[in-house]
Length: 167
Image (cartoon, rainbow, N blue to C red):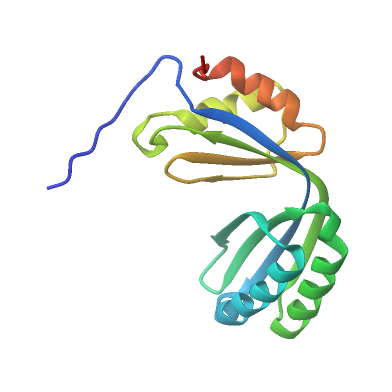
């Protein structure tokens, strides 16, 4: 038997809110049947971009997937060239965007706590902060925002969440 705890807090505590700047994004829309080939292409691409900051994937429909790859902006030209070459062979489309930033909310067991994403999205909507894409894991929420937006967005989040101070 599994035990699950659910918490409710009037103001949610998080471990930290951080951000990364100077990122680029490659968005790939590709046939599901090309997933194995994409895996091989990504191994090659990772060698050239050195590291992905974030990777998200969604199913668009029963035959199409969409993947977002965030990486250091200085590697954009090489990464884009490699992915366009792969996409041409695999009947995929590539869209790229530069000058993005990522915000990370790190917290204890977000999956057991009610309404955290709603707090974030509502705060950003109220202050007209555009979210390009978002991803959630058990203990982290990832938010991609336009260039020069992470600092004001982080300020907004610090008003909405409690971040324990170290002594």
